[in-house]
Image (cartoon, rainbow, N blue to C red; front, side, top):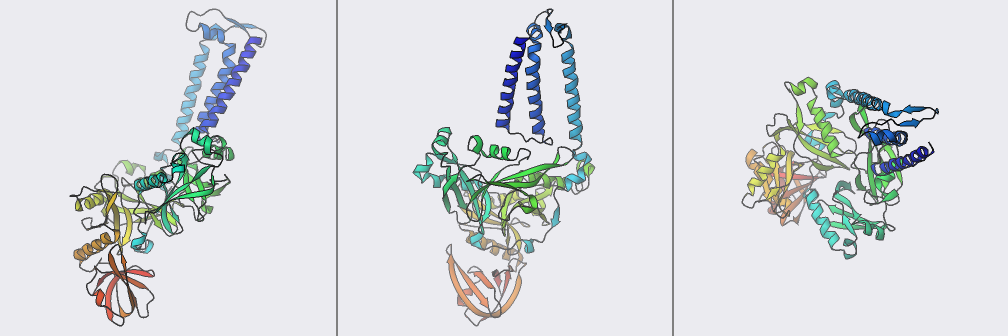
Length: 551
């Protein structure tokens, strides 16, 4: 018995070490709602049970492969029992326990199935009707983002390659989170340690900085930090971001992290937390986020409604798309989603991001489940609040628009990027970049959502837009067909050249707005002077408005 006790103690110690290492690397939340917790708990319980049971039954284990021998083991009561005679009882007990656990898990899973909770899955995301021209203001040519994720990766690598002392020590994470920074759409991503030995050389000072790519100008900067980033997914031990969060919030369940910087350029990790809102393990949804200062590791959890305004990415694209599809699928119940499918919608094959005011929105089209290559409309989802607007604008789906843009330059063999949605001349319009085989942007294109055969391409954004507005005018006869007519006397007029094109900035008497007209609008523009009476059609409602055509 003494030997059995020593063996049991050693095995229990080994089991505890294994359990600790499992927790150290797997980092499951210590929350009974989490499936990861139950996996960890069952494995831990099995390890402890095995460590206790094996020493007292070592005779059975040794003889299980051959003929059973009579093995007498003294138990705590002081009596001897024939363990070999009880061999058949243990597998039976284990099998019954396993069946009971499987049945329990099946029942718990069933409580959250969509067939029993279709309306609750539908309402994970609330779609509200929006007015496109009211909600999405037309932006000027120097605000249109032209850098997609792949281009940002290339620009970042080029920038890091220019700095010899860093390129040998660090690499660049390819996450490139799109955020709004001081009113500009930018992509940011941190540097990461190149390998374990680079971590040894640099971990005291931390990661030197992060890459910032302006999505409009393509200007790329390596932002060096006076105090380095000491908490990140690429760090080790207690400064590893996942481990830092788990030991700080042992019961929280975390979604995908996002790297952001605040308005002062301080780097943060945004770690959304989630819970299950339907049944036991159904209806996963975000309920808040932990903001972690990437430099000093300070952190705070905010409920969803209190997350600071500067934060742009709380909901991941995957979660938003899943909720959009639930909403489109279960509008008229579960049975209708399978039989009949009246009014059943789904998201299109891709998505992109759109910066509006101080927030970032996910854009994607909504199409019928029959896959007829057309959209019934599109949605914009605020990635901080999940507020969703649906715009009923039937038109071409994104892939068709991409094909249409590529058809305009088919002799060049350029490939279109996935579009972003813009308001051009008060019309929903796809904007795309056209790349060559090396992934370099060579041209740009605007494609009308409702009539995807209307395309404008050019070597600059301004040229492409002017050609698009011309195509609209030819198609409809009155500029973009949805502008506002105004007449007045010219109070002031000035010119500027952008991307090789001349633009005229006109003020009318008793009107504070500035009306911007491209030379392509009319050949009469160079001859207009102060005091002339003019009439034109414009779009927009801000301080600067776009002239679509002149009369």
